Length: 92
Image 1: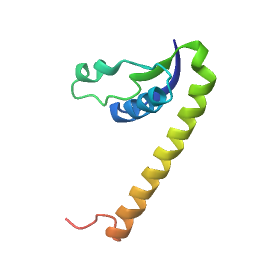
Image 2: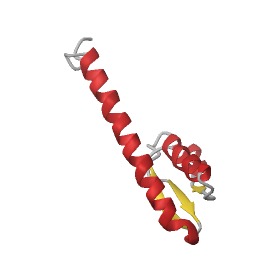
Image 3: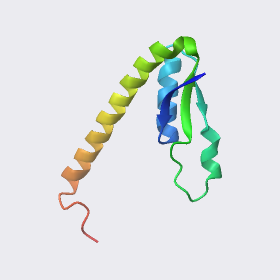
Image 4: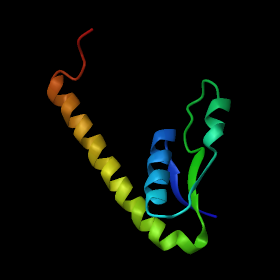
């Protein structure tokens, strides 16, 4: 198994895993259950999406597409938040 994606959070890990599996690529999330063991600490970089070596080239292309879509979605959310709150959440 080879790591094709290091996830910042569980949701991103599952989005990548689901996209890979939808294309017939078996995928596994390593470290998925470690997030519950870190307590109050930020749970970052514990999870990795892994695929068999034979699927690595195709999986890498799918991961790049998912990352691009996630980036676009985050930018859109940030733009909406700035538009809805032009003061930048300064009001208390």
